[in-house]
Length: 290
Length: 258
Image (cartoon, rainbow over the protein chains, first blue to last red):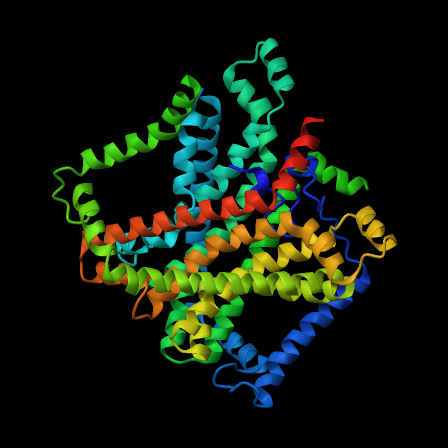
């Protein structure tokens, strides 16, 4: 395992975990202030983007049957919002997302800490983890379809499989980062194994765990919607598939926009949660001070 | 010598145990969905060598390679432009954040409208999914070019192509590789999904076909092959990365030990 895929290397606005920062990951803590000018540019960018989509089909650069103008998509979006079936679909998607994420996070943390605490387990499991991790979760689609059909369990299994590795790998990075001096100190003060896990290992690993959860949250949404799209279990994905087969192009675009908004919400929410949980941590505190 | 043997033992032990466990557990399996591993491995040789390798595996891998490389070129070049100008970055950021947040498989139906269901559609789907992590990481990497280095390059009169090559791309490359690694796993997923949607050949198509015709051992062998492909590609990626970023890993080691 190289450490280059450690936290902070992943997404643009990550709060890098301490290991990555100390190692000179380059980016440093992403200091985001939003002075008026930046917001202005951002809004202008969005306006240009939506303006282009409005304009391109209107002037006939792209057939409107392929890409409806922004206003038509917005109309379709309003229609969707008024429909109870749409909200059921959103609820279905979010249910499998949160359930899958919760299971994967719990399993990833437990397995990761177990691997760290039991002697030699790390060396023994390393090769298997390296083998299983890159297996694309969609390879399991045919299997889960046979086993569970278009059930919620199919979606859940895929989500859990994909999200689990994200969490586990980060937990493993995190537990590697434990300061030997702190651990020895705790030991000489007579801390029992459980107390050392609780007071030394866990606080060290927590920033990595949060990075893992944030990455897993994004992956879980992708897999939840993918599974619905391909397998047809109820949710936003299958609604998109229905819109596609019934040739309701504006509705399809509207639903794609909804999935994007959900993604943005989840990303932002995960980042906020990360900052809250790690408010005591150097990487977050340093940002506030500077 | 003993250390090497011990090391090898540790690497092989668990995979061997898992393999044996699977083998034994399904040895006389009468469960239709979980055929004996022996049967799966036997089918693997039958199914995936010969004609099917040419008809399904090669086209899939070729589409993945085409889409991934196109995304790499596109993501890095656009990322450098956006990352170099503060105002462009500020304007593009919300749009990019939104586009990146769209789950890539959702774009399959959208792209199908434009590009039909041919090879072009699949390559386009792979590009549309892979480009975001590469693009955003490049932007971030270019933004974070070390100020002292940039000033030094400027006072030595290094500009244009050589500035790009020796300063910008160099300093951004660890970030670019981090993005490229994410993009690779997305690419494999999209390769499979675009073929599951509509295709006449390809790995994803073949596996779904086996599942629909209840050719269970063949289906299992396809899942195994997809797993092996993912594993092999990540090995290749790591080899390339180790070579290209050798300077960077060395730098980090010295920083760490100091």
